[in-house]
Length: 429
Length: 171
Picture 1 (cartoon, rainbow over the protein chains, first blue to last red):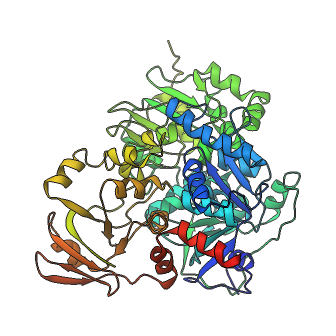
Picture 2: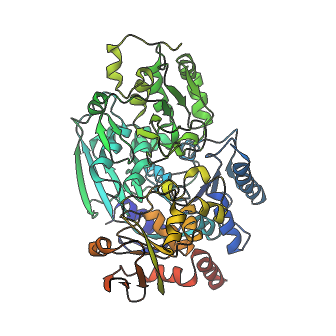
Picture 3: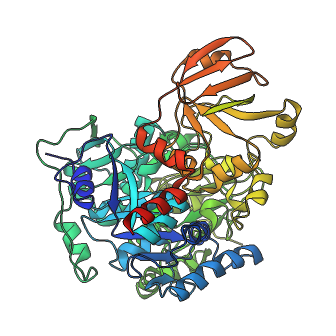
């Protein structure tokens, strides 16, 4: 009858079915906020005035953006959240030492299950669609109300079905698939809609690539990115999720606003040029322009997972970051950091002259840990390349996957790992 | 609801929340502090330009407010003295944040409105009838009607009074 998005929303508002365009008040399984959005959510919570949270087990607070606190103002903001978490005994409260980037952390910790409805005061909350959950970003006041009522209003979105077919070329990953897709439909191409990713290519890619794809649904205006749960989903959540959940899938007769087929056979790795994620170009074209970069960022809720670090390390091993380029690696969570250390990846990064940081959103949003000066260019595995996103409004961000990012760090200009073998190794002075 | 005022225009698609309020200022949630940096990366003379024409209604291109979920964006606009925003379309999260925080925003699907509009034009927005009148030119345009569910939220003054009403009813 319905799409996976409709079926999840219906189950959470106690109706047998819902239709696109319908307004519903739905119960959420998780209500999430971070150090930027939680202070305003707490203010809204206080204004509603019950002084009682709906469920201390279902609120997740993650201090990941400006932490370890970069200045006095951000410390004050974090303190508001710390005080609230202690007062209300919030079970899933993550602070410096345990914190990771929220959208890497929540799935890793088993906090999100298939079929969940997740409301997050962060636009990249849509990441959890990779688990077959309906997860969407919203504002702080929504979350303040959710902290009290456990409920949020939704307009049931239409869905667009994306069908990916063909065989992926070497180095092409979830990041390339989603940048290509956003390039095809535009930054408003899925506004108000759920993007359902299907087809043999989606069946074949790993969970990390699915997280990356769902993460960037918002960059096409999408309300959610979502993948129907399969064996890979179940393998991922085994040993992580320790509570009941209900698996939903799209019914065979579900109706879609549109179906878009994408043949991946000829798809190259992608780079989105400044200043929109939809400015996606094939790497061969970008390499020809020889765009020199001052900084490379490998990390974020989009590409800060162990699989991403493995790709970067494979390319950086035995090589060195170009003398005029800085490369910053940010593992998404403490567990990813530890895994990277145990696998020897951190040593590879340090040996090749990368800076390795504690998990943080940091440079992605121009917060800290790698801000660009006027005129500087960065290639980054993050999700937005808006004007001023990583620093000065006169700086530029080029979005790409970890393979291009690592290769570009070595050569000092944007290129593919396939270009590396052709050159003699350059070592940093 | 009737809103009158003069217009400041940024007729460009995809104005994003990093332009409305850059993330480097999100280390505070003080509305006046946020407002002081409003539109800074798009127009560093925003306040001077706005003041020069005494504007308090903003007219923009499509997909207004795309990007992050920061509610700081409509808050910064409202506290910078903007009392309504008109665009061909809004990004989804910005739309709900504006509704939730009580910043009236209106979708106008008529390209003629955006072709005609000039900074400093005097507008009258009649939200009940779904009409914008450009008093400077005398032209009238349709705006998208607001669904009753959203009118209920805006009608009581935003999501917080709305939640309070639900709690009261359930008690």
